[in-house]
Length: 216
Image 1: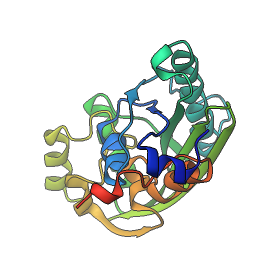
Image 2 (image 1 turned 180 degrees about the vertical axis):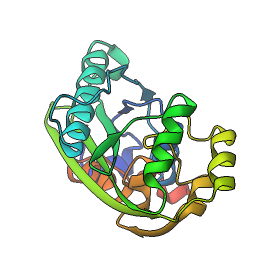
Image 3 (image 1 turned 30 degrees about the horizontal axis):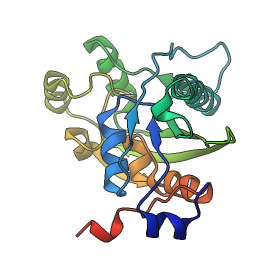
């Protein structure tokens, strides 16, 4: 594997696969100056296992997504030797793991539970290196919502912004106006904790600052 100095002088860098179809995770990586070479989302069952904690669920699903993408990438000539990056975000409130809301009834149930109270957001990041070494980080953020008025509740549901979002909301969108306190990583709540993700990549030899000289 090339060293960081070799990378900067030769213009070569190893490839990176993002095991996600989430536009939010892609945008966060791009914010850090990192452009994946391929997106290999994994279609996995995200139903919690019996007795599974929110932390364990996030870890299990991020590892599973990474492993599925790893098998696909290793069978493609253009992606052999790639780094594989996967993540999974879980929202926990009121002693329950909240779903990724797909229908309005799910979103409404999530909002009722979140209104006027604190909840926790966990994201597990899993990195598989070209040598198939697995590295993981679990990040927790605490978020408190204001008590939602009937108008806020109904209009947010009508917006449809909740669809496909863990806990039935997107903090980077309209629901950001509901947050009265946040302790921890904001990007973690969006879906990919940037500090921890960049630290994982950097620690395993991926040149995360490869494009920074041309960022201006």
